[in-house]
Image 1 (tube, rainbow, N blue to C red):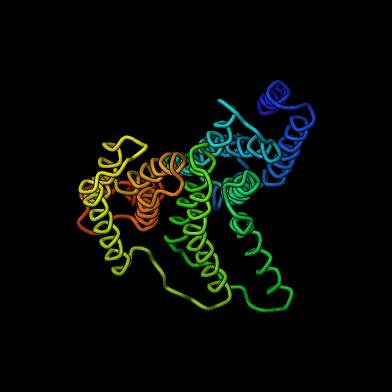
Image 2 (image 1 turned 120 degrees about the vertical axis):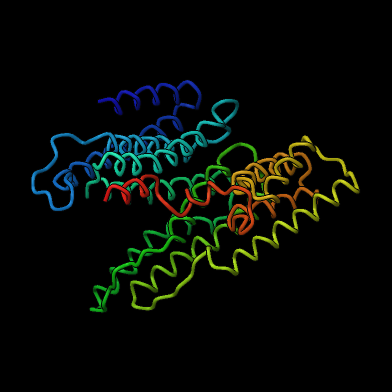
Length: 354
């Protein structure tokens, strides 16, 4: 009833801000996804219990309510798939919806672990809504011209992976359990960050297309490794290996050289120069480097929006993406975001109590 009431408000808002037909289509798409999620919730309700517990829980619990709210946000995001010429505050709504959904994706699991209320239903809902969220956001950035058509493969990656497993099962081939891999969670989180950035009305092509290709490759590579693993071919690949720590040093030194050139040549910068310098310094010293690199990417987006052919802006964007993906490596002053990328909130507390 709560989600339905919000959907009615969403329908009225679309009718007031968009043409009648596109607004109605958007509302129907989001409504259809909400109905699909309700049916999925009913199907998973018998699994609303902890491991080893027979009795189904009386209530859904805070974590599952957060997951349901995340699904509603993704459904409302899908309502913007065929809307164009968003202006003013409306242009920021899709990005804010997806950013809120991404934050809830991290928070719902944390709440479940910290309150010891983890259920199989919550796990199933989380997996389904993760795939739906990335698919919806990927389609939206492609339809808005922010990414090339090939970027749709990012949204389809999970479904292609599941299709490949079904093909193996039908052929009578073995399907092995998927081993734990911190790379999987890290790249999924980074991909969500990229999608959120591309949805904000800050970046414009061709910068968005270059960023899409740079981050699409490792994400799809991760799914390829997963498929090889379930096929019985284990490949040990981890961004925390020493070689990637040294690559991080190369990106930091490259950014240091770029900052030196900017200070020496003093080219015309269409964004606050102090902001570029501060964010670059945080990346170079490894002080919350990934967060600073994300800010550097957004700053480069404003830069290239004002001067799309400025080579300095492109270099800032490329180094921002490389550090955002790879991290700052060893001898960094403070890397809190690395723990967030490779772990889940609540793991340490559970380990201590066990």
